[in-house]
Image (tube, rainbow, N blue to C red; front, side, top):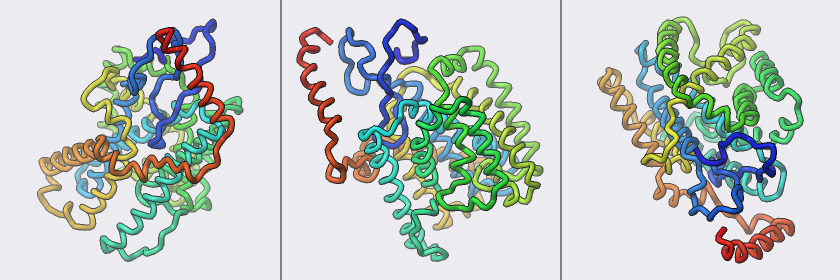
Length: 397
């Protein structure tokens, strides 16, 4: 772990706000200038390997889970694995996003990054997915609607809304109970509709707010050896419960995109399921975090490109679906399901690599300096930093 995860010292000066990455998902960087009397680290060395590893592993689980949808069929075992993975992979990703959005405010430079890293990719990929559906032969819907996210783009809508409301959650006395209350009300409100996938935005909101409330020591707590040991029987029990629940529970609950009435359940089950699934998701997410490595590994650098892998792998999954690749009978057997899982993991890994990021940076991390007015305060900060840099270099900082 980096120095950003050291226990808080009340005698130290407050740290600057954490920066966000250009990919739209908060970046695990330690605060800048945290140690003014230490040599500067090389670019990228301040990234925390734990969070990069967690983001990469979570995005692999997302891709593998999507690859299971067209092949699981009547397989009770794969359906059980599917429900367990869906219980924690997006909550884990969203909690990390919330944790690194703690310093977000309405300052001009942060709003610019939010627009270029979230809004612009949403417009580009929502349009691209709509055109892709039409070219692939799905003529059921020829419209391009920015109000109706398709497949994966809902997360960008959610991230934009969540981060814009971050200053509000900082003011609320009990942010997590309030967020849970909003999620519970959403599950009994089918009138919300599908615009901007607001059901998902509201039902996943508690995980983002929880991330805002967490501190570095909380992540250290779940990464202890005792937690890693406990996580083994916990995951075993979750798989057993998932296997038992397959014929008894609607998997759509794990998507968080429908109200209880839309799932054919009594209205009161919505709030109950929100609380029950929140508790289960937190337990499994904590177990997942306990096994995430904290050191630099071969895939650590890929954690900076997880949003690339997230948005791009959808084209592969849907292309295979439209082309009938998943209709092969042998893919619905254990060896075929394993092969599909491996291919999905390899594909999303490649999509997170630097060459792919360079190709698609125009859509994911556009600078768009031409679109924004120059901010006098930001320019003044830049001049001040440039003026101080020679002095720091002479002092060995």
